[in-house]
Length: 248
Length: 282
Image (cartoon, rainbow over all chains, first blue to last red; front, side, top):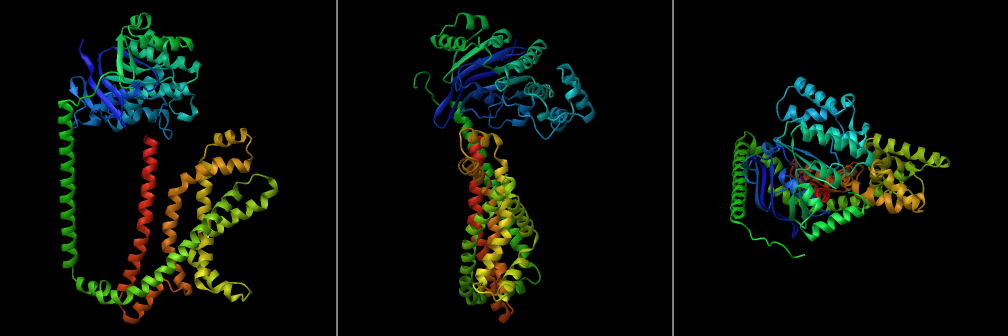
């Protein structure tokens, strides 16, 4: 299998602090890769770099073989191929669910209104949101909003979906419905790079888990190895802390 | 924390920086060329236009500029004075009216009604009309203690006229502070008044800085309206010169002075909005 997303020696500094310190990571097609680690370990920054929301200070990121960290790259062209879902949903509050989902297909990908709406309704139906098409975001629960955000990211048929702590802003009972939709995405073969604090979910869904600590990718491997028998003391301490707070 | 890898800038990153610099240089040279072409084009069209020499004599006469500048500049000091006195008064009136409109207690219904009536009247009546009413109407009453100085009367009129706008800006700002902030303050035991003073108003004021500055830029130029009731400010002085000579350069001098006064305020507003933007994205 070839690498869909390849990250090589990526550095990122903010105000003199190194947030990413030489990250290497490969995401192959149809693979689900999770990033775990404490707040401030650089997980979210790495996702933002992959989506070109941040420029890297060194290193290379390739998407499907094309270097996207080149200063001459067409940023919008790269983002067309990616979907991202944020922690805070970031739905557009002045648009209906349907308009939120069809915005990019219609305005960026040039899909006709009829086709975009039909595809959006199909996706909504698939994820149990068929009756919400004409609702506005503030009429939905947090879980429903986040599911709509996932559908919005899917609607442009991205090669890769980035999920940035998509359940962190949700009540525990709402977390389940969002995790359900991600599980379905995995079954459909979607390639995903995600950050999460939901360790059991991470263990269940990931093909590869990466532990980040202070901007360094300290350890990576299959979930059973990383959760069951981590190599590094730091990883063990982190997982111990997670266990003690009852989240694993 | 210094453990772990140390960053040595790679050749690739150096190459990338070189490309970025080249892109920046290209952008700068495109900007320079387009500005030069534009300026040359406009200058050529304007100076070759028929009647340009007459425009030059009527509006850009160095002789009339020298003759009128001292008087216009002196008059302009009065504009600045009117503005500097009216501005704090307007802020006070605006804030008080905004607070009065927010009073919830039923006993204060009359106050709320008066405040609402005032905002309607002050925003509804043209500023020039208010200046006429106050400037000519008040002295005509011949009551004791009523000022007769046109500048003072102008300040009263401008304060009345702008107070309503500023009150609405403040009210919008207070309304934009999320109710949970008031709830949090009240649950700490702060009274409604104290919660307003220490928690809601400081946040509201920060948010309304830009619209307030916008109103004040508008106030700066509206001080010229006071000319109509006889205050010897910049516009009036320019008018006197122009009536003598039928040359319009003094008006242009006054206009330039007004622009010069507005620019620092406008740039300050830009600076504030840029700062807000940076804070949000950080």
